[in-house]
Image (tube, rainbow, N blue to C red; front, side):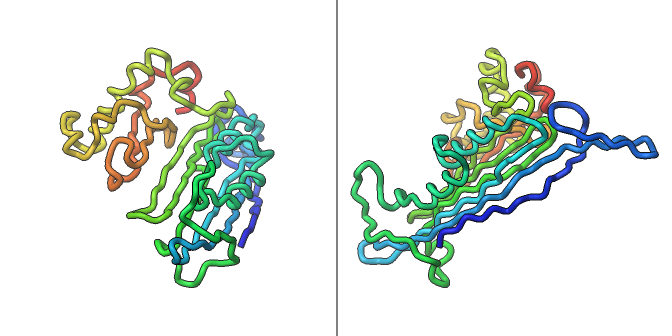
Amino acid sequence: MKKLVLFASCSLLLGAMATGCGDRDKKMSDDGVEITEFAVNEVIMTAGRNYRALLQGDTVYLDQSVSLLWPKSLGDADLSVLRDSLLSYCFGDTACAGPEEAIRKFVSDVSVLAGEDGEESVYKNIEPVDSLPEGIAGLGCYFNNVTASVTELNEVMVTYQVTSSSYLGGAHPFTTIRPFTYDLEAGRVLTLDNMFTAAGRDSIMPVIVNALARQLDVPVSGLDRAGIFTAQLTYPGQPYISNNVLYFHYNPYDIAPYAAGMIDVAVYPYEVERFLAPGVAKLF
């Protein structure tokens, strides 16, 4: 059954320091302690739709769903680039008028079964159903889901995690994560190009390799034996900031087997501060 539900979050008041951007109210108590409030307004948008199809005479079911934490306001920051980025990372589409249209389009699109560009599908008689049969959950049901959530938020930045999970038969489901950090003051998503100087971009890989070896408690020469595809460890993963640490994210198969799961390489600010572009260090 198709549904679209909006859960309006309360306006969160986060105690924060009085630096950076944002709409803040300051309160001074009798004991001289100043509390700064940073107003946040977000909504959780969810939708789901179920389908039934025939595959070589057998009946299969597909569950498609979305859960999106949508930012309405974060202080007084400009969120236009953040919103466009969320639509792009979640749905690969920024042409939609807004998140509602993008969500409806996603859960209504059966191209994962029907095929694209005129390709003949092995699935026949694809049709929506009100609900899944009882007991069909788990690997007995195909799924195609997207979730976007906030993993860190303060008065200068917000870090999102976009998770895309699907199972369309085969040995196992497949999940990818797209983490990213948005600089509220600059109004931009942090990328390798704008986080680092040109010289820094050329010098960051040895730092990442050493950090990964430290994380796995092996020497750099032992990364192969630890299961890392060192021949593929030639590029930085997706950068994001969490708990004052810079991470580089790699999805399954990027630099290791599927069984290794997601790999997030932790690099500490002091290891990269000489490589950071102006204005980035303040985010740590």
